[in-house]
Length: 517
Image 1 (tube, one colour):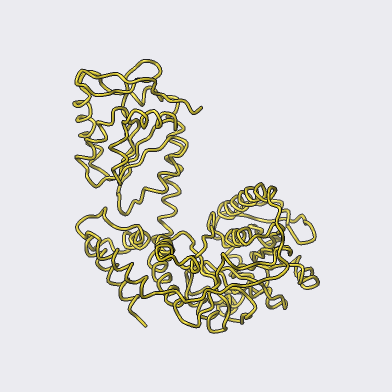
Image 2: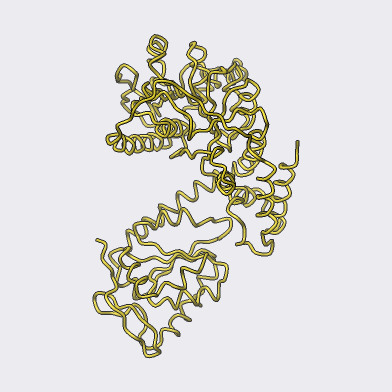
């Protein structure tokens, strides 16, 4: 229930407004709240980290004392409900927080989301949770829920940081190189907002799972009925079957993803690429004079590039945002078709299961790689088995979706694949509810709209340098978020050098990339 846990204010003996809980107890001392706040801020556990989650705002004195002592710490204040936060606002208790850029207040329901958005371990260090004793006693029934949300957030943050630590440097490099590529005068960049898609057709997202095998005949026979969006892995498979995809989506930052397109591409295919994806793929598409749509996949540097566009009133070169959900390229394909205006759609080959002991449909880049590496003691079958059994498997009965219905089959899945499937189902359900209320006048043709001018990398570079040159190298907490993923990489692989040297190195390498021809 959205009910405030504070019911009124009472003056302390020192003249401080103290919120009173609904059971009549004060949220902090009515005798000397200043001394209580001092004692709280001087608790030894706060010296072990720079990200604090504080249970209870109360008079706010303890928050002010914490800020005085830990000027660079990030402080997340937790209250039970939005109504409680509103009570504090209406009684002018939050004036201090609204002016503090390193503080945020949230309720229990939004705690996990807030932590994921604001806590960055390579910068903030250890995570500290501490509640006012009075607040903790009043909310004793909420303690389990709070613990679950904190643990859930920390688990997701840990997984995210692991990925950033592995790819942070590569993402940073790829974004800058892709932006430079899009600045070439003959680069064919799609203006997504103005392009008209043939939404009278059924959009089909093609994953590269074994279930794709069941739909090749239908795609060939009735090709004109479908707008085909392939994942990068399924694109060459479809091409081998003489099926040219209308669009292909790529998200992989690694150069190995070039194997998806080594057997050839079609000029008729729209290349939809994350700005952080391998620039090698975009270069292949560019050389073949394909139309390319770079999109913002959520990286802070991609967002910075978008903000640069908007600040220069350059809406024609806006990079649309497509979400990868749990991290699967299939989910980006779905987001792309939804935002393109398609209301009739299907998803095939997104099995997230090893159907009949097959990892992928035949003809993917893995066939090429594994064939090159195969010999008597390392056969193609052996390499696929290693791929399938690298994590624990769970047997399951699978309903395989095809364009003509469904088929029952046996399969094996993993925890990661199940997470992908759950994320896919959630996105489909969410968008199906939206689509019920849409009555589109469907377009019957594809009318691409190209940007009139290339991306202005020179002006973007000036804007980026302005941010980099204003970073305070003596303050760990003054780092702009555009460097966070790169910082995660350095935190893992370059622990032998100090913070100042790390940031200087990142800034110098960024400028070097920008200046290279």
